[in-house]
Length: 181
Image (tube, rainbow, N blue to C red; front, side, top):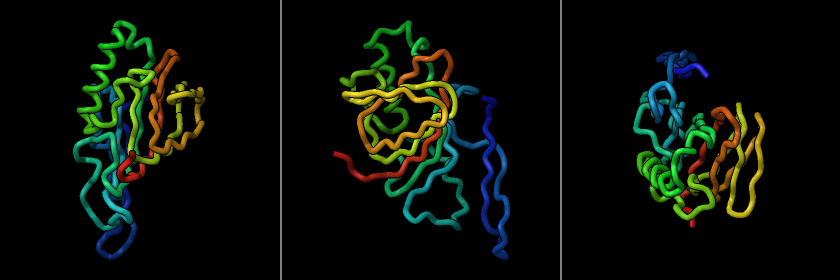
């Protein structure tokens, strides 16, 4: 997938006519330059969102969770398991814990989960696998996804596991669910 990814944002001008406010790469990615893991396109911080706010909410710090009462629209990438073959289970869990801390979600990480990437979000997530292959792993179940399969992930413990040969690309819309038990 060529990067940067183009993002077009619309709005209204002073006369109330629809216009293109911005057209260019999204300002917010997380991960190595040229190979980001999280790519945020937009976020809201309240419901309903303020349609007249001119600030770019995707330009701020990237976070795993949506803002309280808000939503996040993003792409995310899941590398193949072979990318981690040189690491022990303990090293993977330590690296994954550090990643969740970097994206403001240390509390989401499950260090005892069945896979090193196990975590629980405090959101309802609408997820579409766009390319590649990935397995949704839960506490007691798992299912393989193919492109354009849709998952409605409702704040459950889970991990995305890529047993394929190339990085998987997924799209997600995360809606804040408040506090999760």
